[in-house]
Structure formats: C-alpha cells, structure tokens
Amino acid sequence: MEIYKDLNTPKNQEFEKLLNSQLSQNKIEEGKIIEGKITKITEKFVFVFIPGLKSEPIVDINELKMIGLKDNIKVGEKIPVLLEKIEDKNGEVVVSAIKAQKIKGWYELEKAYENNASIIGKITSKCKGGVIVEHIDTGSLMFCPGSQISERPLKSIDHLIGVEQQFAIIKLDKLRGNACVSRRQIVSSNKREDKAKIIEKFKVGDIIKDAVVKGYSSFGCFFEVNNEIDVLVHLQEISYSRVNHPDEIFNVGERHDLKVISIDKEKLQIGCSIKQLSPDPFEHIGNYEIGKKYKVKVDKITDYGCFCSLEPGLSTLLHSSEMSWTKRNIVPKKLFKVGDTIWCVITEIDKEKRRIAISHKLTIENPYEELMKKFPEGSEIDGVVSSLNEYALYVKLNDFDIDGFLHANDLSYSNNSEEELKKYKKGDKLKVKVLEIKKDEQKVRVGLKQLEKDPFEFFKDKKVNDIITVQVVSSDNKGLTVKPEGCEMEFLIKKSNIAVSSQDSRPSRFVGSERIDCAVQDLSYEKRKVSLSIKLLEELQNKEAVSKFSSPLSGKNLPFSSLSEKLVNKKNKEKDEK
Image (cartoon, rainbow, N blue to C red; front, side, top):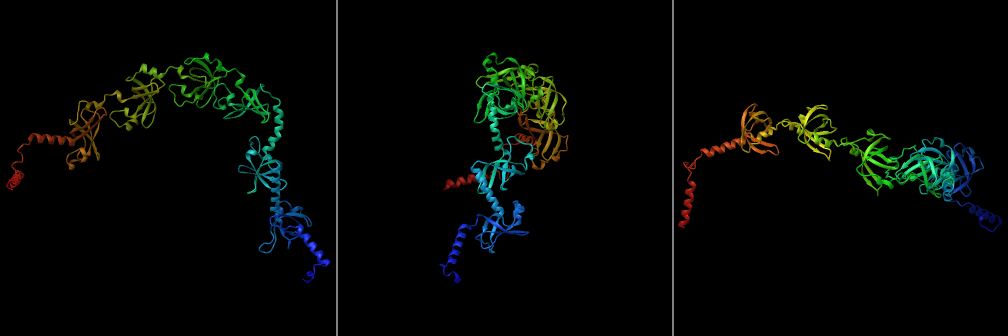
C-alpha cells in the first residue's frame, strides 16, 4: 500500500487518471442494458467481460438458443445483456440476454407506436380470440384480435401463418408489457387510396345497374357495385312503405338498381336509394278506399305474415291473423307463395305513418255468422272429434271449418267427467247441442249431455227436510253412495250423516241394494247441489214423536219433581220473617 502514499509521483497520477476515466465511461447500474464482450464459450455457458465489474458474468447457452443468437456468437463479439444484480448472495454477477432483447424490443415498439409507424411481424399461432404475432426485429410476441386480421371474415387464415407482413400497433400496456396489433388497418389504408379513385367515378344522381345484395343490418342494406365498392341503402330509402328490417324485402345475392343520393369523400362512403327510382305511390293513395276489395301480389313471406303490393312500390302487410277465420297459429308459407295474386280488403290507410293494412279473410264469408244462421244456439248438429286433451274434446262441426269446444263436464250428467272423457277418441262421430256462439271471439261451445233429460229435475219439486227413498249402491270409509228411486244420479251420504248415534254411523252396516229413507238436508237447484242425510230423518222423526206423544204434566209424578218449588217458597218465607 505504500506505493500509493505519494500521489504526486508521475506513475500514481497516471494510474489515478486511467482509473477515473474508466469509471466515468462505464456507469454500472442494476436494471440497465449493457453490451458485454464474449471472452469464452463452453458447452453450457458464455463468459462476458463488462468493464467496471469485479468478475465476468456468465450467460446460459440456452438463452442464446431461444433468441436465435447461438449460431452467431464467437469470442470477441459483443452482445447486449440486462444487468439484474451486481452481486447476488453467492457474490456473483447476474445478467440476462433474453430480458435484454425483450426490453430492447419494447423500446422499439414504443417508438413505432409514438411515431404511428408500422412494424414487420409474422403470425406464429392461433389463440382464443385472435392470433399471436412475432416482431421480426426483436422477437417480441404481440396479440392480434380476430376482428383485426382482415376487413372481411375469413374461413381460414392458414395462408397467413408464417408470412412476414406489416402490422399497425393499436394498443400498448406498459405496466403489463402487452402489445396489441392490427393487420386490418394496414389492409384498409392500402385500399383507401384505391377506394378514393373508385368514388371519383360516381356523382349524385347516377343510376347504378344490377347492384348485388351483400348483407344487411337493422339500419339498412349493403350492396356491392361492380366488385369494387360497397354502398349503403338506408332503411328509409328502401321503400315508400314502412320497412322494419331489410330482410323483409331483400335476400342476399339479389340484384337491384340503385340511385346515388350522397357521396362523402372524407369517409369514402356512397349513399344510395331504391325508392327514389320511382314516384311516390302515396301521392295517389286517394284512388284506394277502406272496405273495398283489391288484388294484391305476394312479394315476401315471413313468419308473421306476407308483404304484398297493391301496385309497384306500394307495399302493404297481410298479417297472419287476417288470413283465415278459423285457422290458428297460421304458417303463412303453407297458405301462399311468392308471386301469388290474391284478393284482399283494405282495413286501414295511415298517410302519416305511410301504412296500409289489408285482410284476406274479409273476402270470405265468416263461417261463424253462417253457423249462427243455420244452427243458432240450442240447435243440434253433427260433428267429429278432431282432437282432445285432459279436460275437453274439440268437435269439428258438420261441413263448417269450425271446432266446437266440448268440456268434460258437458259430456254426461251422471258419470264422472274424467272417466267419461276416456270413452272418446279422435274420429268419433257425435251429435251435440250448440250452447254458445261468440262470433267476435271466434269461439263455439257445445254440449253432449244437454241432448238428454236432466236427471236433476227429480229435485225440482223437492225442498229441504223432504223425505225420499234411495237405494244403496256401495259403501266405503267416506259413507254411502245412494241413488234416489226415479233418478239416475248418484249421491254420497257422508259417514257423519248416517245415524244420530255414533255407534250406528258405520257404513259397513250396509252391504248394498238396501232401500232406505233419508231426508234432504241441503238443496240448490240453480247450483245443481244436493245433500242427503239419514241422521236428519231420525232427528225429524224423534221431534215428531215428542210433539205427538208427550204431555204437559209429564214428569210431575217423580219424587223430586216439586222439590225446587218447595225450596223457593221456603226461602221467600224466611225473608219475610226477617
């Protein structure tokens, strides 16, 4: 150390100068990219000399393989590395070639993004929602969304994989180190100049012949012109009549003439019209009257109706509800086809909304009115069971295309409605009675039991407490099932109404076919409800017996019959004496 005591010597001053110059040239800081000189190459490691470090850091040979530098390295060349740690816990310098390349690549992406410049990359693989793009210069990986690959949807992108091409950087996330790129912007910008030249060919008022329907949206229809440019026909420019959606009028691939009505050279857009090719038909709508029949042509069929034309350009809607009097849930394409000419009645003309409503069924006689004339309510009519469900039958009435509703409760007076319904099947012929016709609601209700005499008339002259004779049909835990003599209906006498005495209220006492008397406990002729009781009959008989055979002096001969009177008299006497 004594050699450095005297710093004024020429050698010491020269050494100090060299040391200071070396330290000033190499500012050693963690997190910086530094170029190191390769001093030695082994099978597993590359040794790098970086001035200012106490030892030579090493780089794993696999890192150089991953970034494509293994075949190009040799002793004496320089490679960039990221200085992660000047000294780790083992006292060694830690550097990374991969991280250095990534950071260097990120700087280049940032610079390109700030300058709005394109970069060269290639699609390496597909992923969820898009593709992975590799930056050619730095090897950085970027994401390209599927919507940014091309202007038009592509069935396959296999022809683009591995091909070097330009991409525009559309988003950078510095915190996460993610980059999002677009191929579509490059393709669009290349076409913009060509599109501007194409638009120069057109002017407002031009007629475009045979434009092809390319697609449509909720706001209009897109047409392709001469395989060069796409134009838009707005929803309001399709027809003078109201159009809810272009698919009501057009089909993809159809050809139509268009009129150019606007040109936007900045946005490179052309607006066209179809309706302006013909005069406004609503100008002479006064030639048509509400309530009159006119021939219309079916132009388009949808799930809910048909679009028809009274004349070219004057469209109207025939809704499915106005196609038939009797058919429900109509499928329009089963009744009509495009090109058919049919008669319809105009039901509404709205000039403000430019809307016309028509009806086909009004040209046909209403079958419900015809049914009311020939078979008014109360008439009998033949029919055939057309369908049935768990609670009713539907009966096709005679030659009318009308199904009458026959509820299970109207099948029979006597039997259980559910059991009675099981007796019928589709195709059975019946004679029914017309109970109700609702012309406006297009409903008809019919009945079968109404053709027979109502057995409930048996109770027409009966009243509560009347005594009737019944025959026991069966018995169970609920009570007795009985049938009044002279009546076809069966009724239940509840267990609690079999006898006054609870011991005698056992249904098992009866085995069936017995003839017994009972009383009418409750009766409502309007509601067709009746309740029978043997217990009530016993109570009525007991009451009658008491009223007939008891005496006012009954009980006077008992030993204590006058005891209460004597006690009262004695008590009153004691009060008087006091």
